Length: 179
Image (cartoon, rainbow, N blue to C red; front, top):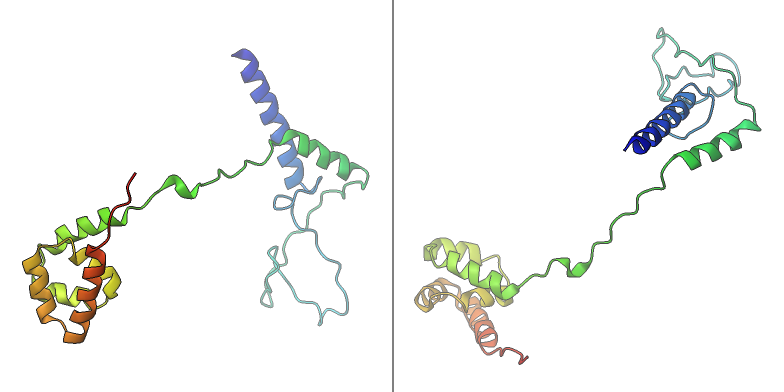
């Protein structure tokens, strides 16, 4: 247990030192190190004042503070980046989500919806059913109370009621595969 604490403390110390060095501008870590000021070109009229995020500033606003940290030596940057790469853990891999993890059972969904729709008055059910395709509606209606379905079909437009009835016939004639 002491070994784990010592190793964790050393890793925390190294990581903190690297993070501090990056924040001070001593080493370059994208997203952590401060952005370097770009050299100004042209006259003062052509140059725009910007804040540290690169946004334009209004006249009269103070300029952002520039870093006073010394520029890192070119030969030290690759060594520092290599040290960072060794100190940081490898990036975590995203777990693969298998498509077979969640299986949908349309039959079960139709049964549960049929049970719910059996408790809805036919007038309200007619309004709900208007936006459904006949092929989707038939699967639910085939599992509902026949008297309720007959009332619903009689309130529908005759052409739509005919389409839905054909679909109910098709759905009701399905057989279960043997196995």
